Image (cartoon, one colour):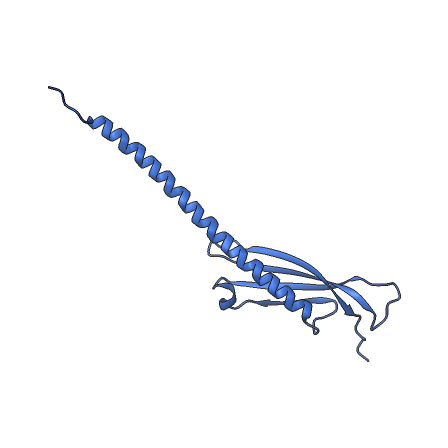
Length: 139
């Protein structure tokens, strides 16, 4: 009698091989989802940083030498806690420059965000703008 089909051992081996393949596929998909989420957070941070830098470059009320900081609202950051800190310093100042002299001011911006994974991430930008040396306040 000639029987065609698979033995129980062949079926078990095939099932184990498929189980290993499916487990590997699920692990790969999980990593891909994590990477996509991380890149989405980074893209959002880069967009916020560029927008904040543009705001800082146009703000005439910033200190000549000092720092400012703030937080982003949940509507801007996608619900992820995030904020920024900007340091402002004169970059290139002539030796005998007095009040009213136009100089370059360096703006260093650090943006931070704290994704659900708990690891605080940062992004740094740097730019320059022309500004005047302020007149000192009187006594």
